[in-house]
Image 1 (cartoon, rainbow, N blue to C red):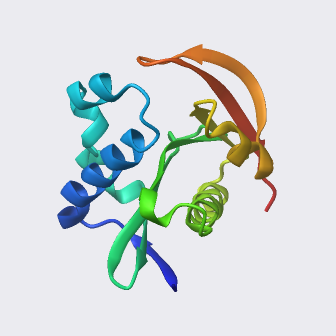
Image 2 (image 1 turned 60 degrees about the vertical axis):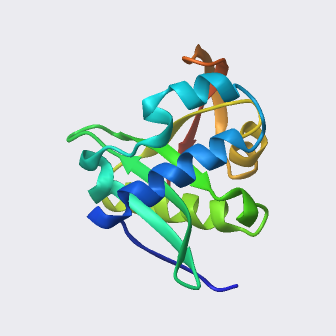
Length: 150
């Protein structure tokens, strides 16, 4: 399965929102809460210019959102979701590498992400280090950061 990445388009919003919810529900954690949360199935229109979409055979199989505020040295990995049926095929790693490349191109020196315990090993294997803990709407989570090099 060849994976290609591309910028998000306006017509992707509903597909990305549905993928985000499907991926979030796949572990079976916090199902009722996720179904009740509008933001669990939505991708803000303002994020579209910052989203990288992964496709396989023309189907959207994942996406990542990398945000950087003007003048900030740190970028934020806001979202990284892969369709559950496409897990463990390198798509998350591909999206993360592209997000980091874009962060470097924008002048960021590090990337910050808030991730649940299930995602923590993925980020640590990709060079992220735990910098703290936070309480999200659903559960405790880890703050992780990676220093970037050009």
